[in-house]
Length: 257
Image (cartoon, rainbow, N blue to C red; front, side, top):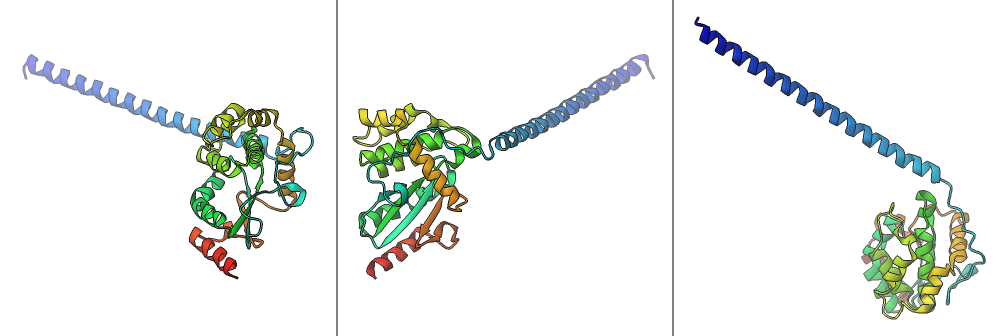
């Protein structure tokens, strides 16, 4: 074999060895990235678990002073905000938290039906506002949003503002509703709501104590989660067969007597 051929084969083997070494290095880097990513995910999960553990049981009432109920509040201790006519034959009791994704899902699915039935005088809704997410994840967005909704009730704009809050609900872990300026900005979507009186009510936390009292009533009442939706004392939210159409049939049947 000529010297030239031997040199050529040697060069080819060397190139192959270099290429294999590159592939091995690339594989080591790939594995390192996978391991690194896995560690980050585990640490991220641990951090979330740590936050939840740290905030567990912190559903404490704020030092907001006396419970000042909004205008027109009804029921025991004036903790219910009514929507619909008082003489409607059916009453739906809703316990909800403006930071609660499940509450938003319920509102999106049932809102057209609830509006139709209340506007027709066939259904009355009693809304009870709580702040469970504040306790579970920290922050004050549930409280601030509930106070703002109570301020909207003073202006006769509760239902419209209530719907705007759910239409603009941030992610559960995003405490955006803790910002009073954000709540006032959203009030601009409801005609006639953004007034000096509303702004003062929101910024002063006029109804913070009332929201805390409602939250305490939720806990002492043996209720466990939001939304809790009661019709005739039965939690229809837990009924897997319930639909807006079925609820409408039930309410209309009751209305006919």
